[in-house]
Image (cartoon, rainbow, N blue to C red):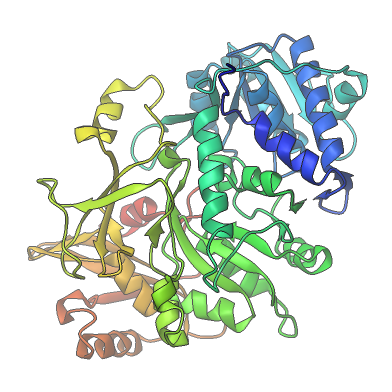
Length: 533
């Protein structure tokens, strides 16, 4: 008998066997086939072996979304080495910390990040070798004279080893909203099971909203360093779809690629969707594009703006610790015929657990909440692809897995159909006069005001009530909503019973922009620092 191990190589092999001539495109620079991808993955592994990469070696990648990154997704783990997807948007101090903590030995670094690596080189004591990736000429640098394409040209064939499915495959770090970034890691088995479950989720249900199938054209708009671009490049390769990689995100290029290459499926955080819509020419719509929106709440106002441009949108939810998918917003069979207005309300919910996810919303005593908008609790989960531990951090691991369930720190409610709606992060909910006020609910309602382009709500200290909500508004171009207009807008929802009068902010701040985290989420930590005094 042969013990079959679930390893990443099986994902690549299936895609190549199924559609060897399918295209993979990088900007307007590179175009090749799935067979070429397989050949280049072998050559990359051979080149890495030549410079000392072996099983267990940590290989860091600092790169934009490219065909090269996709090759690293496969070659490095398939060797038995560990792919460390470095978050290039962290501060230099945090990048240094994550690379030191990981113990990286080899670094693949895009030309754009060479100055950063040069500044950190002397402190990266574990690093033995650098390889430069570039779209043109090799820059002058003291790091190395090894260039990615040149080493692939010289590389020979490579025989990938038979790996145990529980071998560590990838390593990434949380964005460190409190304290230092924490290392989360995933085995081959976890990544394969996550890939299969997400493929089933988006190709196994005929729900009339969003599907991902072999005739789609895929382009990620979530950085490839961020939890494997939500794992969707692995799904895309398994399904054999045409894949397009945009490199560094530039609004005009993204829109051009969507139209020119016929992109039909993508995923992003709300701020990227906002960027696309704000840069979309009036005479162009994006009919045919299906977009999963996660990372932050998909606000109804933004969803409706996207839909007006022909984009199908639906929410999804996960975390760095969960590989990441946990839920997706799709319509159950008994909801197919509800009116369009009601459908939108379901599509912006956090969603329904995807296959193999056991998700609960619980009170402090671990009892489940009732299906009631007012009965809130924390989301806790079990699934076969969750990170087992924070790397080298047993204390934080105990907190994460208290009671044998992974604690998300997200506060949610459940409806009668079993759909989850996150109402806030445990650390973001406003605690005012003994009552909890959901910042996400206020943000969603304010996003419906025609003069509001972007909104964030935070709690600020209040002598009498402990905290009160503050709304920070980026207006639509040429608009400046007044305090009274915004207050009257929210009072309509008070009259409808959607929020209490107590939840209406006492103050609204109009600003030019709202600070974002390294992965494009609104940075409420920074906002609280700015406004807490």
